[in-house]
Length: 401
Ligand SMILES: *Cc1c(COP(=O)(O)O)cnc(C)c1O
Image (cartoon, rainbow, N blue to C red):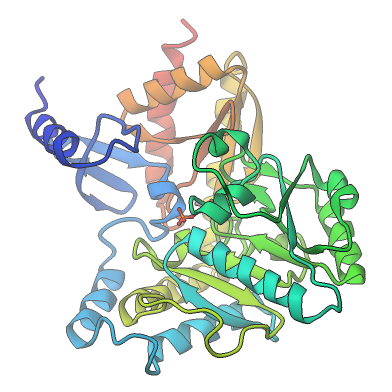
């Protein structure tokens, strides 16, 4: 069957858009719950939520109304003036984090939030010590964003092919153990993802993270936790830092926070910035922060009444089932909460799995070298989970003959 609307959309995109994305041959027109409908009216089950962004799924009436009402009153005034939903979202973030001393700065994306964290750490390194500290240590298989500084902070070398010279002062450690060797008298911070999202859904060891956190505290080196992907209940807790039982100096957030409206946030224990040190024209505007308030109210309630934990249980049961049934394809389940993956036995299998998933109309993601990643909407219904896995089983069966 000819997909007429897709062909038109593809042609328009190729003519006018820069060719930066390897897009699946799909375009969507609308969604409902965890289902997305293509421009040619095909129904997909979404286990990717737009890379961990659409945490409430699609067509959520409450979120749509919160945004629409705010849009009809005020979308933007700039940060030259007080912004009520911005202050309320900051309050919510601090309360739900349980880290009472924290304060918040709002940006528009994950990379921007990380830029803010890097600037915080750099200023701290300059004002808190006699001899300036400026180096930030990050991990080899990390991902921190696409701006020049966050690209340099991203440890994976495939991101460093062009674009030099990069900002200086980033040091890559092979793993957590190697961080200790890389710390010197010029180190101001260590930045990590507790669960590496792009680097293979790799969850760092809790003990190792806790040991490192106390070592850094002793040395006066800041611990920045990039929770752009793992934050806002993605791990099952409001923050993955709660699972790890640590208190980071700085936390960055973005993806799931706005339910699809662009927003990023930096939370910090230490008051380092003073007036004029940092800013953003759009950051924290009425629209994005009102969306953030609604998302946090909804998800915190779901967490409290046990719905998120139930969803996680069902999702993991289904994943385990897939692992047992398709041993030829997968060797283990990785990740936590609704940030999970199946490690494929080879890169080739990873690609084939993604291909059959698409044929069966289930959206999943790649991660690392050979992991098939699942980041479903946190609000996904049990029937949608079961339907998605039924489709996956059907597709995977065709791979093992
Ligand atoms: C996605 C991601 C980023 C970058 O976020 P953008 O909004 O694309 O700038 C940074 N860090 C982590 C851990 C991410 O998953």
